[in-house]
Image (cartoon, one colour):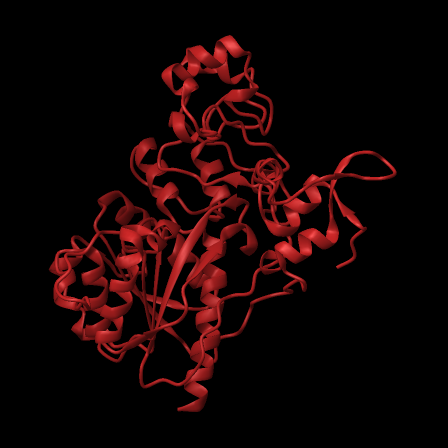
Length: 409
């Protein structure tokens, strides 16, 4: 990686994967000090300082591909499948979905309509037994919700988690006995209940015969997804297996909103036209004053006060409010509703939320993947999904593990 002696704000931001606003705040706090570049007098960051302080964030060598061909027909049982983001990604990596469980009827309709050959088990997971798949499935996956446990004693056991959806995830893993299980969740699981919830999950998997690989939070922008989404990955390896699991390697190239909505490397055509939500006139009048990559602080001061109300005088940046995404940046994490005030994601040029198909593109769903239900239901399904491309890269890491496992037994 060739760099000059100094890094601009943009270069430093891209190198360590932190926003420009974060770097500016660190500058103010004295954590990362900008200096005046001798020739231009611009504020820049000494390269050595950035490399020394943030070496853990820097990917020195660009990953060419995580692709690996499956040596066998590997099978997946997916729980909490939603609208299929992870399942489609795993399919793209060469894994075969044998069955998928989901409670939401609209998401189930989406799965059935797009993949008639998939076995969709609609309903509460508590009502299903999976013992028929014992020793017949290679990987159990699932995006279980983050719920607090009821603790009994010092070490949490499977019985203590009864009533939570992680209990159901672990129950199914125990019933199926796959070589590997993969759970995914929000980054907040790391700190939920001061970390006790995650430790409880690890001890439960230990109890049912699985060693948990050191936890990682994968940043979607490192895996060909034009969105600043993060997912915590929890990988369990059956204790009788002495094969190492390796997370997918990050790519250096980061895709932006323009790559999602325009023809380019990610998609071979412009985003298809589709329905979408609309802002009320009062909101349009405010947001049309916000520039690309701007937010409420870019409004005239009197409009700021009126729009923010009492929040104007409270602390915190609230950078998601009245936020317009720029073409040349990844989108902020999509939510289940495209017009929430606290997490605004306004189109870069038009003063409106992203449409359903734009939402799907930002989550890297293929254009022919249709969503069923009302517009609100479709947004919910897409906003809750694992980005397809992230799922594909995780899938490659699973395929690599299974290839190694079956080659040594």
